Length: 136
Image 1 (cartoon, one colour):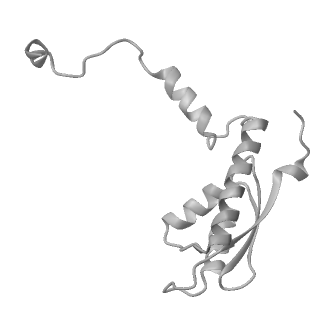
Image 2: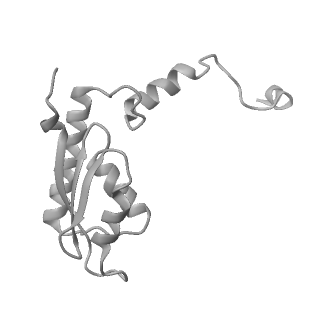
């Protein structure tokens, strides 16, 4: 299925929580995201609102927000923002799955598990030491 590049470029808004010790989270996140592969642009519209453009086949909104959360940023937990976030996660993962993973894309979860399964030894193994095996 051929998809033009305009459908793969996403523009999203990331909302940050108001109660945070560092008030200008959006600008700090924009500075951090600009060096990541797949991110086309990132700019702070206000102290709590980040605009980001990215190629969905290289990185997803879920990966972006998970990374920001892991390093200490606090995302908005308002109901409207949470619903939008869940909808974007679902649609992007569906689009990625329908288009397949590009060659060499390590972000594709399905590909990671397939490679792990292919390299795993599938013979029946007992992981106990030899001297414990006779007791059970």
